[in-house]
Length: 212
Image (cartoon, rainbow, N blue to C red; front, side, top):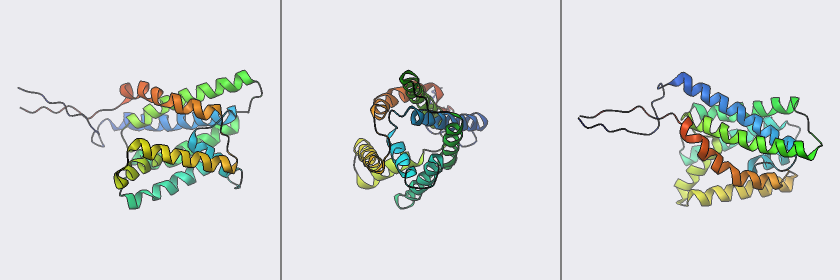
């Protein structure tokens, strides 16, 4: 008897309660980590430089703009023929609500040591949160889907498309008054290794199938 284990996205109903719990825990923690970085005032992640820049000119909260931009990006999936999942739609709303809720109760510290701690913990929390919601395998975030869709349609590498997108939103956000600083660079350097650390043990894999 030969056994072949297929690894990929599991069926929707496979371990669904655990995956939904993991998804929403990840999205909430992602919003909390984002708010911690904002309150550190040492630099935001690339898309949040853009969100904060917009917030300086529009009478909307930071979290509302996270939701609005995510919804607009999701609309761009249509011509790219990307298919959203439960996690995709949840990503648009939940992290934005979590950001606003955390910002409402988390004051902006003045001591540099506290600001650095907020930055470091915020980045670490986002790494864990990314592992949780990506590992739930219920659909990519709107910005991730835009990246993969553009790569597929243009034939350009994921690396090139991701870099082009993030440079564009960082420059646009900076010109609008968003906070660009050492935290932005630290996030760029740390988030990849952190996701790589957390994602494997948190990934829900497809059930093994046995073929005679």
